[in-house]
Length: 320
Length: 310
Image 1: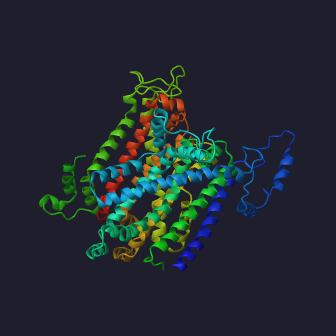
Image 2: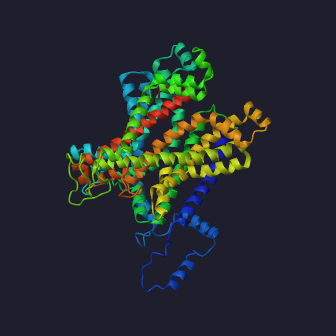
Image 3: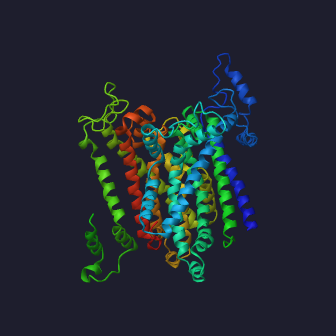
């Protein structure tokens, strides 16, 4: 197992390298450079050329890549094109916490809803709730999350006025606990929207996993030994059914990331997804590429963690 | 397509069937799979609904006389009327006409992106899976690299670099960023086929690589390819609408379902004109739902072992 973990971490390194290569290539393919935005009429073409020379833009592409990666590891992605003088990392850090809260909230909804319902459906297959859950599963995977978000705004915010439709906090939210509740209140609709698709897929997986585990021999043995229904369910069934769920988590991170971009767009929720949309609208390439790199790193780390957890949870797997 | 008619056609292909009705041999695996597919109610209904949608969007000029791109600033954000069934949008364009013509664009984008991805995925997957070795590792490392970023984010970033986006460019961007998934699947099924005796047999009688791939590998891997291509089309339709919604997909005034939904970004339209944005949203939902049911039906049909209801 340890060997596998070490090997898995070693694979992570070239993947990270590839990611930086892709993002750097995209950055280079984007038109313009940090100096082409300077509109000062006093500056001559010669001065701009000198600036480029000093900024290392006339070096070979490899040197430029190395410089860029070295700076990036220190969190230095240069300055934003749009907010002149503002560091890209500064801009991202001001938005990142919101996205993290949103993702955690969505994930919590997913797990709280999907796992119990999935288990219930598997234990009572073809019951009314099971049919409902299956229908919901198909619906959740087919409805585009932004459309769901719009309908949620229309019904729950505009018509019923239960939840705020935009932003991440009220202007007069107070402090302490009241502020926390206010934040949570703002997270409900975007969180539901972001969590919808993954709730649907987790539910389907949970159902089919529990069903297949329930049909296996060792469950029959456990029941034959006279174990209670509870023990069989929690000690034998769930532990085994959770294994593929962890793998699914690895896959779902990518969906969560792209879902967050669209969801934040629908709710004008000021996270990095919204920042990405704004930056694409204004062609703010340093910010676009920094966010892309960040999202890529999230996904790589998430997959790494999922794989490691997987090897810990399921000792049966052999890796050779 | 009626369920009952199909077996007859199958027997037409099968000379034994005409003489002796009880003989079931001679059906190809593909025909068997189609037979199973026809028994799946949800999938067959989905095919019918999808066909209705396709006919409606093709027959758009017959159904409505309005031009979907003709704006009329004196007649904006009007509610439904006998002239404009679903009212008009913020530029005074007829929403109903945009629904039909927008469906055309959304379906064409989804379908052509799927075909384009299929071509790239099958070619690269075939090369990697058939030849193995170095070519294989180069292609698959490249695929791994492309798979790091979620496809939606990758499309978004690539679109941001391009000076101008047209339907053709958009389709190309989708296909060029999403081929790795299918390539992996094709390669995966080739790996087990490669060791089979009939392939050795084909090689022994001197069949060329190209022939082996087309005559032996692709037909044997057709199940996973068709299933994934179908589900891919659904995800492309969603991706197109999501990107058009946030304004980085197919540019206005070309109608697409996603473009129409972006109208609802204005809280005024969201609140007062639900008839302007709910129908295109439902259209996406129904289309994607149908395609997903068809995809599931195909999966069960091609791989009966997997047919646990989920």
